Image (cartoon, rainbow, N blue to C red; front, side, top):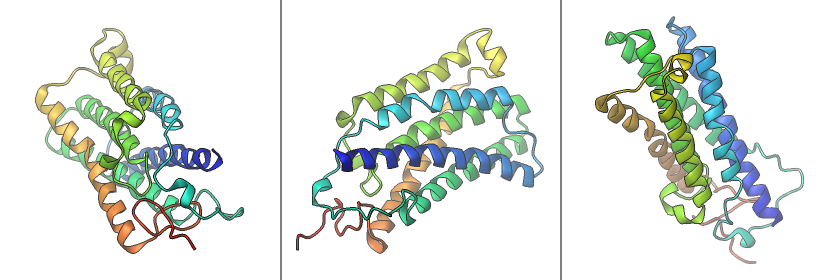
Amino acid sequence: QGRLAYDNVRKVVYLLVSTGVAEVSLFFFAFLGDLPLPLYAVQLLWLNLVTQGFQHTALAFEGPEPGLLDRRPRPPNQPIFDRVMISETLISGLFMGAVSYLFFFWMLDQGWAEHEARNALLLLLVLFVNAHVFNCRSESRSAFAVPLSANWLLVGAVAVAQGGHILAMHLPGFSEVLRIEAVGVATWMMVAVVGVSVVLAMEIFKALQRVFQRPPADSDATDKNGRFPRK
């Protein structure tokens, strides 16, 4: 149980910090590019509300990964932010931040009004987090290798969070406060494709990690499931 708890703490921290990196880098890139403010303060508060809480709580209930008990004991002085954690956090966070910035820049360059661009950008960021949470279910295994049935609570949390944002886009009064509105099918399709790109990006990272680095474990690991050869 101790190893499982430690693993799940890492997953929650990974999700929290990487999404924070994405938000900070988005505003930083927008500042460097001399773009308008990507999100209003109320939109940023809403983003944090709808993407922090449900998903992180549900992620803490992930079950044990294959080979958990085959790992060597973790050194007592090993920090949570080891090389793998730092790499995956920065790569995923900067990817989401950079893609969000480019998407915002492209919309403005195409003549979208600022409020329309912010509306689509906020939708993209919510989708990014809800897609990225499935990356965080395992630091070494593919997101597609972890069955959804292993944590229906997480699936429900993502559905509630995404549904809450969609509802806010359509509710009179609420949408005015957040300065958001419903979008058309074409915008939905475009945002959805961009939103799931973070999964592809981290699938590539995990594949390269399995080839060139040791997968995350309590200390080290040797195979794709995080198992050690017994000695």
